[in-house]
Image (cartoon, rainbow, N blue to C red; front, top):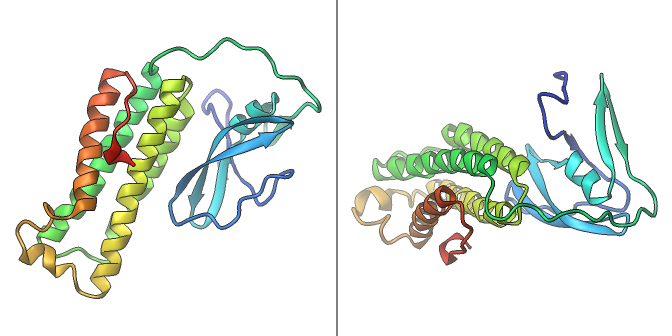
Length: 229
């Protein structure tokens, strides 16, 4: 297990089976899902990541919701959660998207685009495979989404992150659907029919959401779009 340094990592991720009264039951097949966490009477949004069947959360985000802190010294992780701590007044987050989040989100969006474009090209060539060759794209997209989550600090960042997460899940669902279709050999329809992708509503939603997010993230102003839901 690699040694973590606070100067190198802004967030620490740990596996949780059960912590205090918060438990995760029957996560869906998607790798990322947002939960409302209530801790010490304080509530906030937190993302749960599922990697190889295990659930991970951001310890610093968890501590922040409870008005606490998380520190590392050597191999010791210390989480302080004050009991009956009143809400701490704080100035609101900056308006608009932050530069750090925009950079991380655009990088992850490019990775997700490579992922679904590779799937589409394989389908058109009639060689969709069993999904195993797509695993590196999936894993890089998960890591990119984690880094974007780390950088999300403003309200606009959080709103845009939800759309980016939705987009990731769109592609993941589509990939799993095609892998299942391969087992029944129905993916041959994509290579036989030239306009099959144009008639695939899921693929068209993915392409539209990708294009929308690219423009929105580059502009730095949050907007919503139905293709990303």
